[in-house]
Image (cartoon, rainbow, N blue to C red):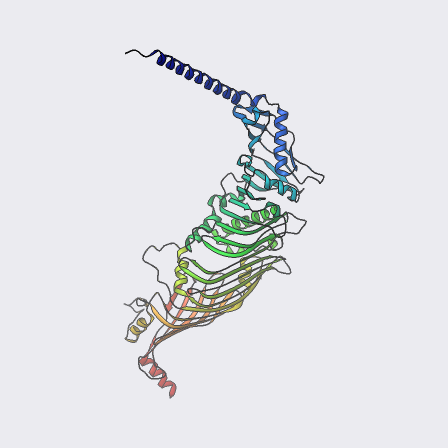
Length: 619
């Protein structure tokens, strides 16, 4: 069958069109490749430099320009790199910062190049080293420029990788942040800005996200509505740390402790904090007002503020305090490991360096299955004193209120501690259950917990330069009352009953007195302590229950924990006479230490001996 002549011509025309299309496409592709490979390199260096200057001027309202550098290189695809650039602050005021980077990297948009325009996107500053030399304030015009920068154009977001910030006061150069990764981009709302940062600060690594509704309000007293998230962990080995802190950072003590505490009380993490409120920041102060804080899923209302004198810079002062605190923690840990806890110093310099106000409060809170009807915390530091106030109410912990003040004493750089605490209706069983979550699991069995409800009042004060000084100078008193509970470790009633029935111990064929197994229920426990001369004077400890009473008095050394306590365990008869007759009177002594007590039973007096003694006294 032959193809019609018209059909043959149609096929040929189709082939020619396809071939022409392929040729055109090849030309376009080749042209595109040529543009991609060669066009960027044809742009003069001065044009690239001018465009980068314009880029930073747009971001900073003309406050920053690029100074000397080590050369500009252009690569296929519009990638450019400026090696070793200096950042030059402009303006009439004296420069309060200086900086240099390993490089600035960016990309040229190819489409504008075809129209003869140069547009730069995705600028990235590689390993900048910025030195602050004074109080650098964000001017309102700079805030407006930064807030408007990159709105609707994510390609204009500014990125920083592996940056370092120092502070130089003329006498010393201090490391503020290392390993800084930063991204700044304008938001869709007028004045809004989003900032994501990661950095190391001493032994801590911080991931931070900040979103401001209006950057122009950041430097005002009222601040800008915004949200901030902080996640804290141990810094990596690349952090620039003092030698004595490297072990601390490697072990991650700070972050590990917070995570363990969070796990113990049922919170996912105590190292992450999310907050929303009004954020204000100046060179000498930072504040978060009218805020809601979220920690591990628990939300609290409050405020936070840190400030120094108006003519000082806050950031370097905070970092110096952090370094001092980490160094003190490391030194204290060494002292604890060598059993020299009494030599741990109590510093007071920090009480006057930064003013801190921190308030939290909440209602109907829940953590670890424990509900709080209300809780409030107030911490204030400044003018030579730190004050902590904490109160709350819950079914498990009753009502509680604690106030503590640490202040600088008048002389000899000593610290003065003033402490008062009051508790009503605290459940010993539930409290110990929460506390034991932090302890190591026992090798055998499950530890028994005490029961009962505790009411207690304590008041104490001390002065000294070390922990040992504070312990030695401690004065004050404490009293406690526990109702309707039980004690683990033995059944006192069954033990005394066995003595009334003639049980013998410490004879030629009998060993020491071992308490009968079980628990000892009690009606009340009453305790009175007085602190003085480095000891706790136990003037009264009475445990009373059905048919028995235990009376103790003595002293406990606060430094050593050494106990010198004497007591009597008395069993009353089951007769209904009033007052009940004594069936057994067992004297005992408690020695050793609080952590390793040694209890020695004396010679018991049973009912017949008590009757003879009473009759003899009557005659």
